Length: 305
Image (cartoon, rainbow, N blue to C red; front, side, top):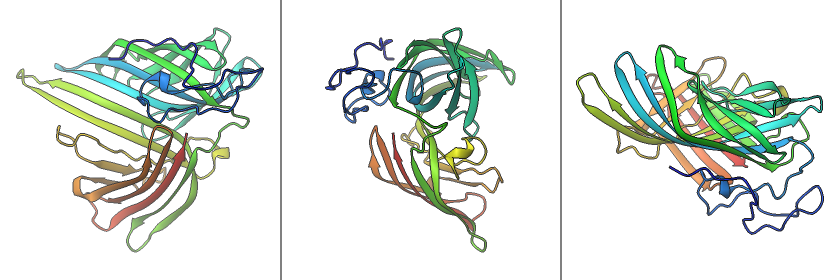
């Protein structure tokens, strides 16, 4: 578990800011730990307001109890968050949300504290350190679907990577051919609105006292037809599992609002990365539906943070 890191003086070999903007630098260190906030720098971002594309990193443990079944879970996560300062005491936030769709919502910044959408069981409570740095923690939604959830030993930090002048900036493009063999549909150059990458280490304790451990990693890409329409609605998620030897297998899901999903696992999924770094992700993916043999998806993606 990483210690909490103060967001002060990110150097990373960059030259200090002059005036409102920093001189040119690399906002992301491709050689750094992707889940360490020090890997990301605000040295090329405006300090005038909160508007920008941010990287939110977190490291936390969960203890969950559900009708006698308990499990302990460690997560490390990074995800993009886009913020537009409305100059009226509010900000508009676009982030990855959960359940396969992105979210867009408005927050008041009068209390200097912002709560961002996490997933089904947690959110992020962050304080504004300055206009390029946020610092805080992960908070539980207390009881979700009958579960008791406790968040322990955690931190969350966010760094502005670059400026934002429109409600949502495209992070890249995604194209796909998908559906049943006799009725393929095409997505051409959909805009990537959000990216989330999470590692999980979970130990389950069952009713008989036996335990089971699962370790895996998800990489989710959310794409929309046009970023001008927001991040809600139709979306796509790719899940890349990194530790199939510990009870998890490579899996990918192609999710659309029309619910013509393609879901594949084990030998029915292939993801080939042309580039896979902290700042850039590109490649192809193919999914053959595990339940419907004639339903498939072929995907090309190119993401730059």
